[in-house]
Length: 89
Image 1 (cartoon, rainbow, N blue to C red):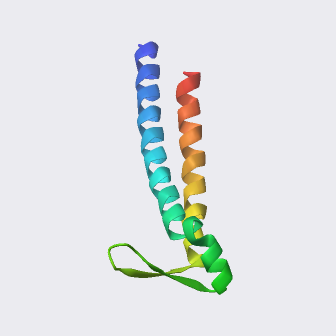
Image 2 (image 1 turned 45 degrees about the vertical axis):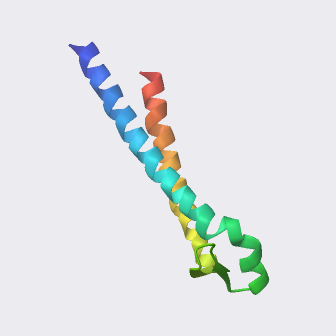
């Protein structure tokens, strides 16, 4: 009986860890697209960077895009902790 409960806990931890890693990946992608990719332009402008995309749309990027990276970090940590629990099981 205990073996089955441990297996269920491991499956739950793997599922939660995978979901957290998926959210972390999305937030990391947003960090890259909204800040890292244009960090030099944002720094040179000292406030914001106006970017024109190939489809003709225009976007005003600011240093606030850095927040996406700050949001991603705890999700990566939580995902690592849940997936480490699966590894130990």
